[in-house]
Image (cartoon, rainbow, N blue to C red; front, side, top):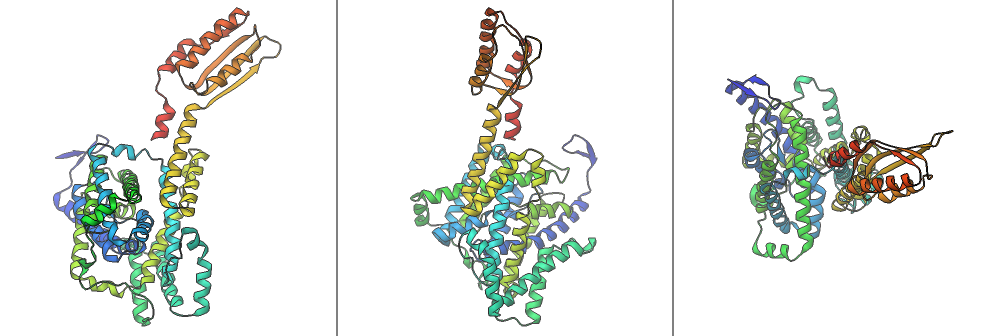
Length: 520
């Protein structure tokens, strides 16, 4: 039997036993990657670590079964941690579940109404800028947690306050310094494992190695003065379910509705961008975007109903899944099963993890997100993309996540409008002759008509004018009509106009390539 890949070629189907074995191994790898990240992102969001693990369970078992991207792995994401933290600080933990519930319902509705492809229209410059801005915010906030402290306030305040926090910890020489040393050891272990570990052992994720090293150091040196992860006796007791009261409060405060819409938009954009990246990593079935969006909506609605963190498709876990050899959605589902078993049987082990060690994992994650490695790629598409990327980051760090993303989207739309309205006109007189060459480039629409009319009216009467339109992407009826009328008027003065009218007509009927490229 043969199966066809997305390019239409055929390849022998893998034996079922091989597929099961590959998925089983990949699920264990993803579980090991997901466990510290689920807990760390929950703490960065202002929630207990159990809330992140619950989201990981739902993202694995339920969303993994329903997903339109079979090899993508869903769970709590750093990309939402800052927004969730702001919502928790503003409205309390008891309202988060309700907000996430309605965010999930919005995603589900978007999937049902086939809006999945529209979320892909968000400019990559905005998405990457959003992730980099979030990375800076997470780095700045979690650096203080790594010193057994708390975030100071806004992103700028946290970032500027890092040197002062280090100086205070060193001068005091108390538990803050000890916690910071455990955090630095954790980060050093992550970097060392990622760069020096033998290829055969790379299957063990570096963040897990860092946390284990931090746990061992704390145990060996009997570091009782630092803070450790707190886990309730009943793992599921931290769940806060929506109530009629919280639902009524949600509908009475439009700020909460905006928060739910922001979670839905950002989670959807990040998920579908991740799905596109995962498709490039393998040759199996391609993503069904509307199905994936609906699955994410169902998953987030359930997370909201249980008072857990919102989820997205996550590139770190998804990449680990593909690299570990996953063949089907079974790997994502099984990783959720392992999280469930861990939460049910071994939650007490979490109390041995230094809080500074988990914070260090997020400091490392924030650094990886913020590192501007995407800039050379964006430069290939023009300086405007880099400007949008940088503006998004600056607005996120200086104001908040929603304003930053909206700024990026508005700038992207402005760039598209500029591309649709840009008309460059260059006029050259041929010395010693009565001839004038006029070169048009860009897009000749009603927006550029006054500029074109002014350039035509400035030409000398009786001149021999040749208009070159090979660099024009599109011309609309208003500009065609202007050229036709000006030609009649110019001929009446003894002049002449040379232009390829047939070619112009073809450009009039042609779809605008620039608009479609920018929309993608």
